[in-house]
Image 1: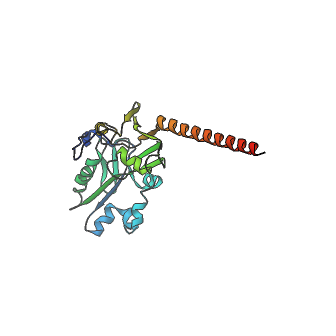
Image 2: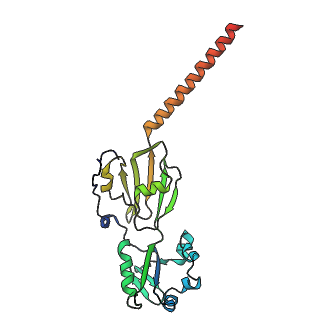
Length: 237
């Protein structure tokens, strides 16, 4: 980003304008705990059976584990929690869903400690990056810069002024073009990514042209050197 000055405050779109709103099919990790082990067993029976160890959370960090053990939002917009029942979370933002579950848990548990994460927040990064692939995010937000970093950064032939984000929507897909060379990228709806976004880092045509020119110059130099050596050999004879 070459167009900002030292210590400049860069304004961007409010987070609520770019945040993912939960919808049918999203999968959540939900933990409801208290200081009472007996209460924990009632509201987190599966976690307690595994002694609450590290492995009890690791099972959620794979697509299969998330699908098998997470709480999927059903067609009515609800998740169903043990001994609590249905909680409607459809249309709720990731930053607010914890409050929704907390309020419901408070009806059953005193001093409940609630943790909620989205498990199916994945993005696909392809093109001129060093390690293209599908990446999972367990924070509430993910920027396009962080997504490229997950792919181990861009290659030398990437055009950082021509990043494409493809976002699935109800009617199809919406595309965005981002210029990472300008501070205006912070004002794009696609600077903060949403689940199932595709990030395409396109090649820089000028860099490819420079590469081809260098290869041509190298080939021409090699041919010239070969001809000169042959001529020298013939003259010696």
